[in-house]
Length: 249
Image (cartoon, rainbow, N blue to C red):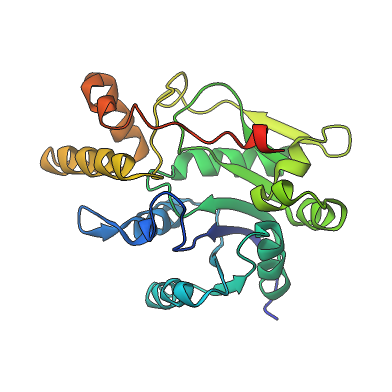
């Protein structure tokens, strides 16, 4: 067992997506989607370590190999019980504070993560998430390892265990919950900027290509500004419905 770190990002990533298999390895401007997620997390000043959390499925040996190539630790655990997968990571790589990240959000925003971590540590909350409207795919959440372990011990609902933190923020009387408004460049935008389908992937490639051509970085602030200036881009994936985890609980 390694020594405990202060703040650790755990990236849940697998190849078996129901709507777009192997999406985490789909290229965007020549880089795999998961590679973009990792790069964004590395930009966050307050994240001390990044761990990839994948499954024990044979197909996900590819994820393990990619993590090794990136110089990152990787832990394999349950496919459906993602909360248990996170605890498996914590047992091997202890940390006090956890940033939950997913492998399908290439526009994960480092500045937003640092803001959340800073507020979380200052307030000593069990869980800190976002308030107000912001682009889907840029959500971020920070949770204490103790709260995660408590949720793991107390919650038996398959959906709570699949979505990792829902047991915590659905029990405000049992856990201290903090909320933070996103930065001005994100707030009030309901854009769909995640990758769950082929259409979502096409939008990401269009955004990255346009930004690259303009000599700008492919990041959340620049991508949102581009969509602000050209709403036609949203037609690429505006037919895609988002699965609402709240209806599943």
